[in-house]
Length: 140
Image (cartoon, rainbow, N blue to C red; front, side):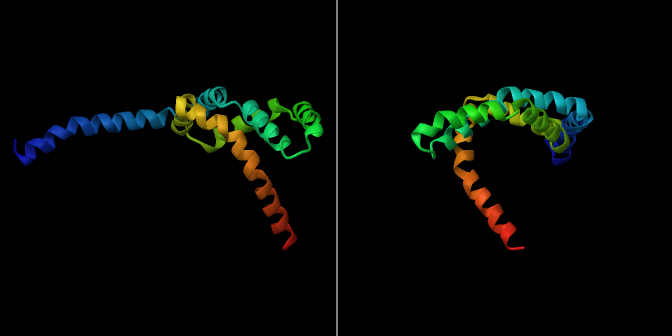
């Protein structure tokens, strides 16, 4: 096979790649983004993340205050509001392909394992984030 023949043999593959790419781009609509965001929200529910975060934050309180804190947070946080806001932000921010990749990852065993630790991570880093925001605001 000559170099020219091997180049010609690549043409069908390149054409297929272009067709696939344009089909993927054509499917990136607000409807496909919303469907992908809802799929992501199913495999990585915000309620789980918040519940884990609240439980971890409660560990920093005296033991006799933890249950009341958790109960108060569960009653006070409007999870449906936050989920709607998150889905709207995802639809505005990410492509259908990106949302599908996130859902694929967080739906996988390793993604589920990571998601199970994400609330712990958020509870660990949030005090530093809040402290830094307060510090920065004081520098005005």
